[in-house]
Image 1: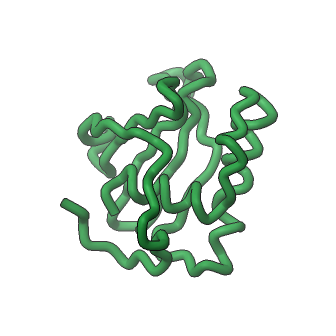
Image 2: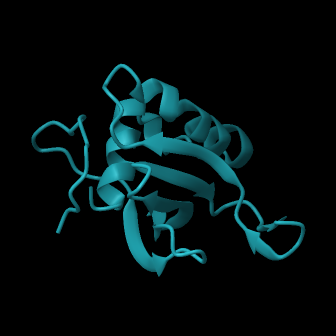
Length: 128
């Protein structure tokens, strides 16, 4: 069941999500819901949906975890933030950094997916 949100951009009718997502519960600080996504059966990104800020933090599951908070815990590196209430004109400001990291660092091109399609995949993966 989709959560209520201020989502403005929706996918076209007949669209399907190219990512598969699994809910992992709440994040370690209780600030958001965590989802792990896969693309073509391989781990892709971790999504942390923060309803208060209307944002999704995107972390790379293909990178090694790194020390955070002066070594207090480890987490996957953050590669971007997606704003839930972005307009269609602002979507390209949210997603290119994420897609560039996946393409240049891990050679994952997402079969030529564009910014808007990736944005909809991320929001759909978080049930928004």
